[in-house]
Length: 280
Image 1: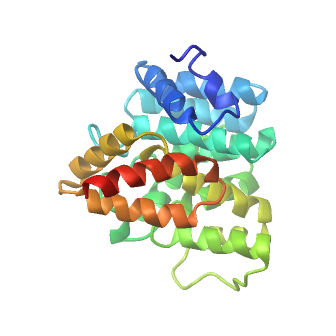
Image 2: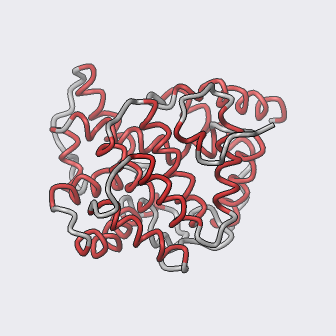
């Protein structure tokens, strides 16, 4: 039985069985008409940052607009306001596991909120960085109006661009490997956005980028089998295609080999993988 207030689990460092509690938090907050604004307010208070902090002001305004339907993604699909909520809270949870300070935690939570802002339901693999660039462009006026400095905007831009699944995620992982283990990465590949270059020179930002990319997929592969299947069905609906269990199984197996900051959730991921294997 879940007895803690819904947001308390996001502030804790409990066992991997936290998956069911996180889902309870997602569900209770997601049932509100002001889901994102309310959740964002909880995030801000949890971090202890003042209400006047530019990141907090910008995030609150974006969250309020998404609750009103502005840039809220695909109704009935995968990339929508509920996804924004789940990624924002997952990013905060992982930031706590990684012992990030309030500023870094606020940055990754804000990036989680905006990473799919104005998503149009098309597959990102058709044109790498198109959807992530759209999200940062749509978020920029809010960030500027709130007084977010250019350096901080560029860092947020790099984090959001890193969530591009085909090019951004591998690049972020390579940059983090360079900083953490000395694995060589020399430059941006042709066609990659210049903002991603910060991951080559800023170790903390590269760590944040990897954390965000894992927060982006954690709800769909690391919590419970039921939620994994529900999100798979939502993605199939959004793409208007059939996504069989083998598709999800391949994704889970790849992520189990690649994850780093969310390895805390490996027991959940392995259990979901085993359930898919049993019925494949």
